[in-house]
Length: 230
Image 1 (tube, rainbow, N blue to C red):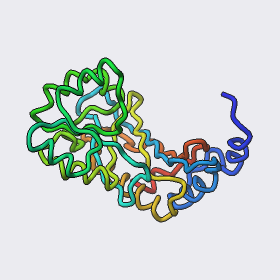
Image 2: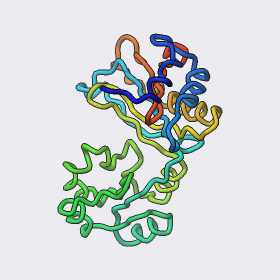
Image 3: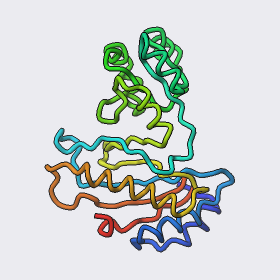
Image 4: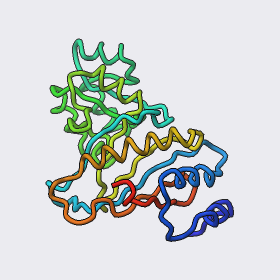
């Protein structure tokens, strides 16, 4: 893969193979985020889990103290009074059956999070093939299948993010923007890591946190020492 001049210059500032302390890694990621836009900073956490086994799955959600810096568009599937409650709480889109063909046939996906009341999951289930692969399917573990739509919307707006294993047993999550202070990024990162440590499946043998890399949208990755976080 051909890399740009900025990326190559940034990569020179990172010692290959070095495992950095948390604060040092965050300072370095901010320093090498040289794009003309406010880059997202993500954590990529490789675990010792085998996601093919149900008892080694990791999925949950956590509210980052300083949010993600991104405006999140929320779609709520509800009916009756819950529809009005979702609107009052500030959902960007609300509806029921009528939204299914819009998503299925028109490819409408102008939202970042989907919340549904439990009585709507029969309808939302029809969208599994579309929403599932995009990580948009509502899930009780993530707090997005709930009757308390106000709390769900408030949490998401406050900076709630979902974390889950991908097919290669890695968790990819945003922890903020390059414009955040080092302290804000450190708080968000620590909150995320505390949640992931707590979510460790009992069935996992050996080292749980295999590697942790922090990277901005366009920048090179900086490896964090996982032993110092465990």
